[in-house]
Image (cartoon, rainbow, N blue to C red):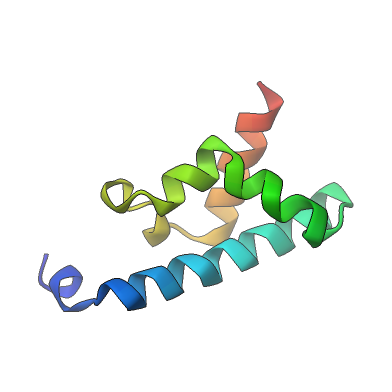
Length: 76
C-alpha cells in the first residue's frame, strides 16, 4: 500500500502510543478504573502486545474497536 510506505517507523510508534493512551482512557472510564492502574495491564495483555506488532496492523483500528477487543480478552 502506497500510504503505508510513506509512514516512518517513528510516526507509526507515535500513532500507536497515542492510540494506547486513547484506549486506556476509554477503558478506564468504562471500567471505573484509574488509567495509571490500567495502562500496565493493557500493555501486557494479548491485545496490547498485538497492537505493537508491526504485521498485525491493529494500530489502524479505532480506539473503541481495540478497547472492545481488550474487554473480550479479559472476559475469557
